[in-house]
Length: 135
Image (cartoon, rainbow, N blue to C red; front, side):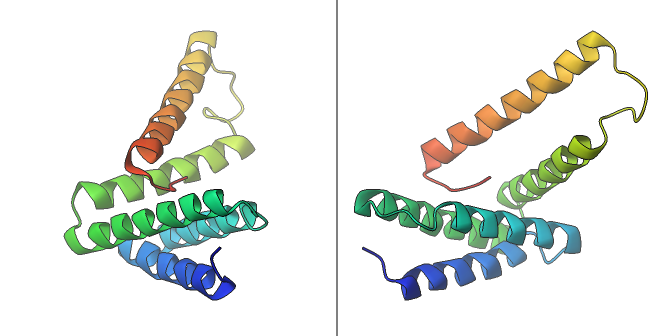
């Protein structure tokens, strides 16, 4: 079982690496921090040792991805920035749907929903394949 100090150290390292992975751009930094906080709060009371080790490994792998994104600035960086942008748009659409007060046509609404579902499925597959903890 991991100690609280190890988990806190991983959280701090992820926050620092997450800030660097989006090159310290302000809106994205806040989004990375918020998502990390939510993830750690969600799994705060996990007692199963096997699940804890799996989550810790995913955290370490995510930290490595963040560090590569900060160092290279290539596709890894673009992926992290796109995740932040999608989170921003998702939050924005929850408050105010696309097209403002106008109603979207049915096929446009369906296309919008399908694209968000595909995005979420793609993110889940990437997390499962690469053993990451991206949100």
